[in-house]
Amino acid sequence: MGLFDDVLRSDQTLVRNADALDYEFLPKALPYREGQQKYLATCIKPLFNSLPGRNLFIFGAPGIGKTAATKFVMRDLEDQTDEIEILFINCWQHNTTYKILMEMCDILGYRFTQNKKTVELFKVVSSMLNKKAAVFIFDEIDQVEDFDFLYFVLEEIHKKSIFLITNYHEFLVEIDERIKSRLTPELVEFKPYTEKETKDILKVRSELALYPGVLDVSGFDLIAKKTFELKDIRTGIFLLKESTLQAEEKSSKRITLENVSEAVKKLEEFTIKNAGLLEAETKIIYDLVRENSGKKIGDLFKLYQKRGGASSYKTFQRKIAKLEEGKFIKTMRQTGEGGNTTIVEKTLKDF
Ligand SMILES: Nc1ncnc2c1ncn2[C@@H]1O[C@H](COP(=O)(O)OP(=O)(O)OP(=O)(O)O)[C@@H](O)[C@H]1O
Ligand SMILES: [Mg+2]
Image 1 (tube, rainbow, N blue to C red):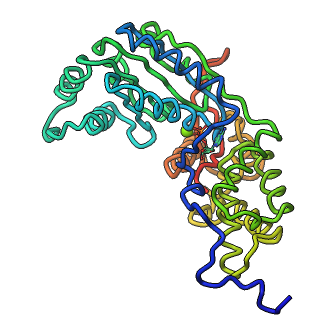
Image 2 (image 1 turned 120 degrees about the vertical axis):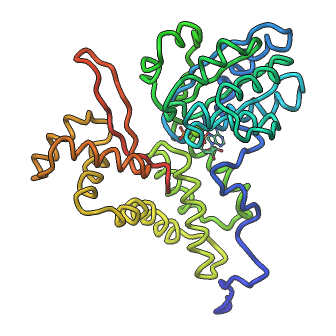
Image 3 (image 1 turned 30 degrees about the vertical axis):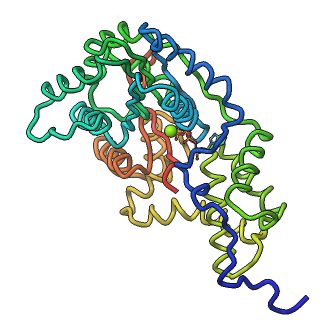
């Protein structure tokens, strides 16, 4: 073997399809979610016969195919008919009734939205949609600030299915009674993938993204292990991308266990790096949330005090809100026996 056999020439690369390293990439097949896809399709089918569709509340942890499975079904639906409009709205990006209606107009190709008030936009949307049937998908529904848009869709659009997607099962209790009683959704739970499923999914993804044989088996195994640990397929995609970059930087022809180990370090550094931008006190609170994800805000405050935190509860709450604004953490209102409380969770979304 020559000394420079390992060096990557500029005309060579490890990646054969960079799109497959993107979180938004929609693969040709979505194994292990066939049951859910079939069920989603069943709920839409009545719309083909001018009957009302069924509504769904889809929930499950981050990075386990909720959005992908739904988009998959919508892609098939789009290929099948022009008679059913698909309005897929990400409520993280569009989190108020006005923004959601603007997005609906955009999807429907209606351009004259300038200076129009929300009620006028309602009219535009309903007159366009009531000529046909429609499927509404509100992804990340827990991010919305108000529910007027949902009330409008329920009341004013005749032939429809509404899918709400969220990480939080408990979110359903948050929804206003007048909406819930009209929505009467069926529940669809997405459970995390097993170790074998995780491995299979990542295998297909890595084969799509990379040339055959470039990723060492031990490297792949570490990616799969880490992904299964964190129960989020996005972790695996991040590690694939990052270890590829590591190898490319070193002009290596192969992605080794060492490259993957470097990438794993980045996974941990990532949060630390972003957190470096936070002021000291907020950083302490952020670390506390990361170590105690899923706890009630009151319990977190007690822990904070135990660790010598000096801020008042009000200030603590404000800092939690700030962290949420920056998408470092997520909070969720929960109704329990003792009244309402807020659950605070870390988010692994923003690698
Ligand atoms: N069964 C599967 N087969 C192939 N790829 C998958 C599968 N499940 C998830 N993925 C991939 O994992 C990534 C995350 O999936 P997705 O965006 O659907 O997660 P999610 O459940 O909607 O998460 P979140 O709640 O954070 O929005 C996507 O890139 C998706 O293509
Ligand atoms: Mg999603």
